[in-house]
Length: 429
Ligand SMILES: [Zn+2]
Image (cartoon, rainbow, N blue to C red; front, side, top):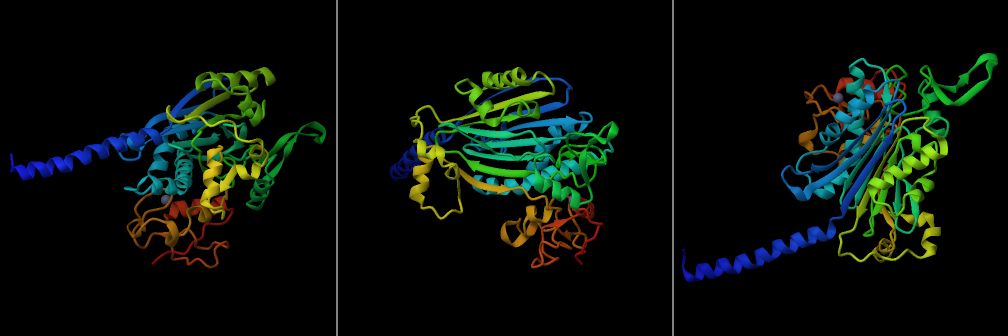
């Protein structure tokens, strides 16, 4: 034991510290929503797979850095791509996030890591030489922030209190997506309907050879590299009232609309809600396809007062529903909107051009120490091996071909193939 003065000082230090910890724990509890989830599935072909995990940690061993992952993989021409993606996509995404980031930086790095993780998973699966492909709708829930990355047509919707239903994904279907149709044809794919006897065309628009209805997927090496694995990514921050995510394969969306799905299960707990959505889809269309649904509820902490239904004028103003962060609106307005359940849009990007998705090194890329790692597959690169993702790109006349991020030769070939180009690239010497 030290002197009386020392003990006094210790006490003096300890008391505020204990108070601080308990206050932090209380804040932690206050600001951390509860995540409840359920899944239901009816199988027809046995090609739908899913992933639900609520115990991932940003910082290993730190429970306050816990986040959840929910995903649906709807396979076609076999199950191999769906199973492979379920087993590897998460690790490939996390492996593309630099170490030692705080929560905000980590969330900021996610969109880019999702692109790298999707492309790496696709490349790895294709190297196994198996055919088959899969949609991938991959959702990360970190407290109030929801990040969705998706290729294909397994939609994810958000239902917030007050009845506003919005889609967090876009459907990569050739039939409905003009932009994607143009991209596929300009990269060397042929888009048309199935011809039957007498030249009659039936069914949705497909990509030939192969006859795939999707414009993006993981796998599908027999269809063509222009069917890219580069995901549409959207990141939103929910307001303090939380919200419900409904992720489902096209077995649901071919039968019922986003609005119908949301309305059909309101008021039910997540597990029952998922079952109800599947039931509703089957009732409408019968079991024509694998039908899988995951419902995730992000629920405010118990002691938060649930706000009333937002005023009608907010429901009508859909454009206000997603308030872009970059918007010049005053902080006051943002506070007011979030109080009535307005969702803040943090990020949205759907370009199929890898260089646009990986960004440029000097803005928000990794630090110098990461310069010689392939931005997609994360392999170490010798100083002479890295090829700038911007090399030879007609989209970045201002970018310097010696500027990062860099790709290994293999990933660079893949990038060029996805854009319908012959392998080319400026080597860094
Ligand atoms: Zn690589």
